[in-house]
Length: 290
Image (cartoon, rainbow, N blue to C red):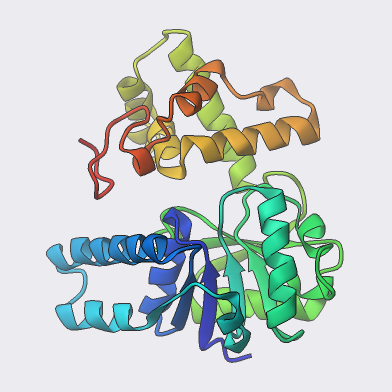
């Protein structure tokens, strides 16, 4: 496979990051969203991200235009039939994802790899909705996509060797990231570990042991984390963190995965982090801390 054209379904934070990263690598991207309004917003956020790099002399104006020119806005799945691979990156809703995979089965030739960016859900269950489960695989990029050089490659029960090897080649040779193979398990490796860290930080905050700022400083400065656990949660989306913890709690049945009360309250209040402008910290429209 040449991997010259990749479909990206979902224009949220991860979808934007994956689309931008692929376009910067010279790959043509078909970005898919439910509506023209959502597509335009996603495209605008990608442009904002490129403008930030432009301000810091990370790219030139010509490079920005070239990257944006490689991203095509799409609202109909039928256009994905010409892609060499499709990456689904919508929110962690198993039924919504299964619907997407069953639709992709109708429009993508059976040799095209269908990947999901899920961080906790079962690839075997997703693949069960397709006629060719051997071509379904997990490809979990980590936020921020452009800066983290790691991808978890998750095999479902029926994922074929050729699908895994071609996906690993895509990750390591085309997008130049380290690919690690994961056998299917809730949370895989990175989400399982980081969600536990975030949950423990939330318990510490809830107990009044330290402020949100000081908890994050302890890990950011003391252990050289790029962001502290609470800002990480804000950037992942508090609703996404809650969904991941609840999924692992159901699957493993261990109390350590039970989401903290404060996380549930924040989600119920609609304070989801960067995407709503407020979580444990406040953020401007560009996603920078206020």
